[in-house]
Length: 126
Figure 1 (cartoon, one colour):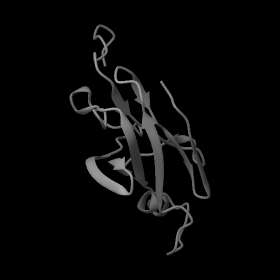
Figure 2 (cartoon, helix red, strand yellow; figure 1 turned 120 degrees about the vertical axis):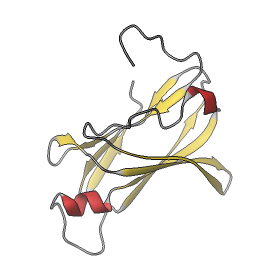
Figure 3 (tube, helix red, strand yellow; figure 1 turned 135 degrees about the horizontal axis):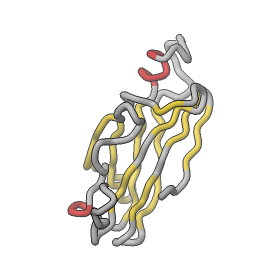
């Protein structure tokens, strides 16, 4: 978003991935977004991180934003192999699901992933 652009009047969701083991953005990680209702998951978006470890657009834009429960799944296995952080067939962290709630219909939610081969963390960013 440019410095002169105003934020959307409705909520939206962004994400990014930082490789904390290597100290850099994680490029090329596929991400899927699901809307969760009880035991039902409906895929509503998918994207891939760019050279800055971010997505080129919000993974859930203002036009499609609804309050509710969501799950991001980060497909990290190929990235960890490609960067030489593991050579194992069975990875400790191949796919990382993060389930969270979006309660404020006008807010910007940012859910980043801080990744290493044997651990990860997340938080509500800005």
